[in-house]
Image 1 (tube, one colour):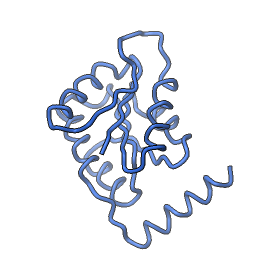
Image 2 (spheres, helix red, strand yellow):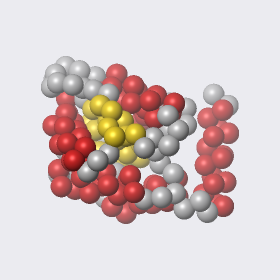
Image 3 (cartoon, one colour):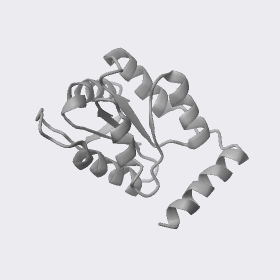
Image 4 (tube, helix red, strand yellow):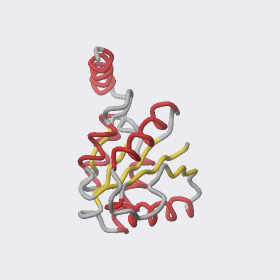
Length: 149
């Protein structure tokens, strides 16, 4: 499984730390930028690139970073097939994977410390979708809505 990472300046430092952590754990990572700190960059440029990669690579996941994580999740959700969520804590990440089969995790660097970000990333990667009929049915409804656009 490939994991695509992206950020702007606000999440740059946290992305770099999580990237190293995940690589050290043996995960295949593709960094979609930002590749250096630039206080004038814009998160949609990098987040959209990563979300498109996840959309086109079945079974892959994305982890995106920003100041709050909210704008980044909004951008990611504009790509077909993406179900992005902001990871506030372990319970929110676990439920998003089990119930919604989320494929992009968005972390806010202003609210998430490095150790917690590492733990949330691992939880996101390793929590399986429940596959329960009610959750499958709801994801199918999301796809139908998406296909109407």
